[in-house]
Length: 160
Image (tube, rainbow, N blue to C red; front, side, top):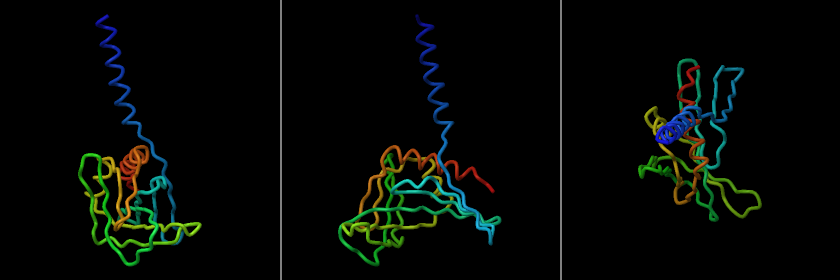
C-alpha cells in the first residue's frame, strides 16, 4: 500500500512538472516584406498582450493594454499592471489613448508601452491579474494571465 501511495504522489508531481514545461501559447507572426522586420504577438488576449519586434539585430518588446469606461477622458497618462504576488508594474508616463466603442455606450482606453528586458521578464515569471489605464480598471482573468505568462516566456526564447 505504501508503494502505491508513493507511486501516485510521484505520478502527480511528474505530471504537474510536464504541464508547466509544455506551455504552448498561440502566437501570430508578421514579416514586413519591405523591411524584413518581424513582429511576433502573443494571442490577442483582452485586455493584455505582449509584442516582440525583431529588425536585424535589434529587438524591442511592447506591452499592449486595454480598458473600458463610460466617460470620455482625453490626454491622460498612467498604466499599472498588478501581479498575483502583490507586486506591480507601473508606467506613469504611458500615454492613454481612447476611441468610442461600438454602440456609443462606452469608450475603449489603450496604452502601448515599450518594455526593457527586465520588465518583460516580470511578465514571464509572474501572473498579471489586473490593469489600470489612468482611472479605468480591467481584470485580466486567470486563464488570460496564464496565457500571457506562457506567451511571454515563448517570446523570450525566439531569437530570429
